[in-house]
Amino acid sequence: MKFFIDTANVEEIRKANQLKILDGVTTNPTLIAKVKKPFMEVVKEILSEVPNKPVSLEVASTDAEGMIREGEKLAELGSNVVIKIPITEEGLKAVVHFERNGIKTNVTLVFSPAQALLAMKAGASFISPFVGRLDDISHTGMDLIKQIKQIKDNYGFKSEIIVASVRNPIHVIESAIAGADIATIPYSVIAQLIKHPLTDIGLERFLKDWESVPEKPF
Ligand code: E4P
Picture 1 (spheres, helix red, strand yellow):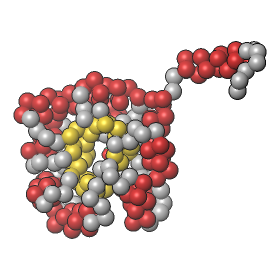
Picture 2: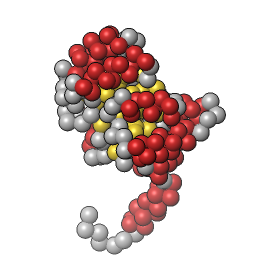
Picture 3: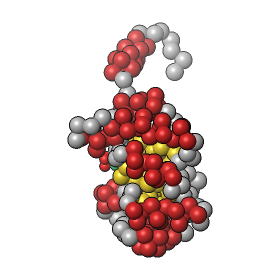
Picture 4: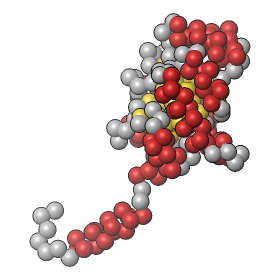
């Protein structure tokens, strides 16, 4: 399973990149707003940190024409830019346009298998079902991933499933078990994936015992 990072914070992207676990970046207007810098400045920083991996940048228009205009501008910033488009009727029209013109799309805000099916039929390169937000309203988000995976396999759709709205390590593990192509993970959850209390306890013990070893070479 590929790991994308779900952030517009270039420091977080850099830290994940150093671990060699990073396969791409996803952003959204909320994440961009959080960094409190001019949009183009943020985007250029991200693209220079990950020049060869897919970076999803979201359009802000709600009509197909506006999405196409914005998406074409964003696509000029790098061949790895993926245009992130909400799943609406207008959004699907824009997806068809971009994919026909060789520009990759990521269909976002997917909350049902029907939406995913439509996005896959429209030819989206990526689709982003949001698990955490479904869990928040007492629906099991991971059930959606299993359903979409089944639909994808039944018909051989090429769209890659990005598990989005990931809130904890269990979401990541269950995504891998379900066979999702990608999980887009906040940096805080990547850090959680590394940690285990028994590792901390074990390390503390090793370091303490090491102190009593005579004539250490280092
Ligand atoms: C997906 O690409 C979105 O950026 C993101 O995963 C949304 O997550 P949230 O529900 O934690 O805001």
